[in-house]
Image (cartoon, rainbow, N blue to C red; front, side, top):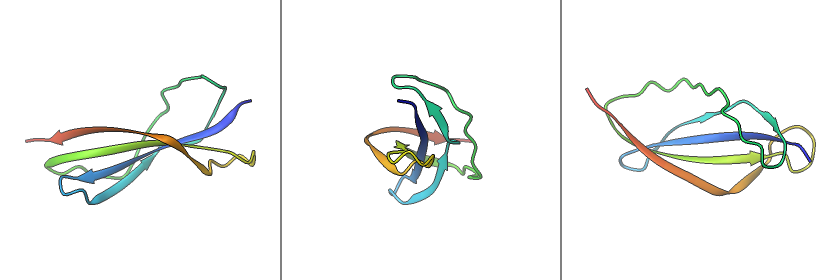
Length: 82
């Protein structure tokens, strides 16, 4: 059954402090379907190292709004340098 999905990217600084959450728009996906949704946010990067946690949210009750967090969290890091 197709499900409405959103992905949240939680950005943390080098100390682990949460800086921002950037989210995809909601997408209707079939089971096993993969996509590369557009992603935008208002966070303006500064110099430093950052870690990101990505988590999918699913519409578990069929009302069209993602309301249940996926069990898996993917992490990656990056640095902004001059």
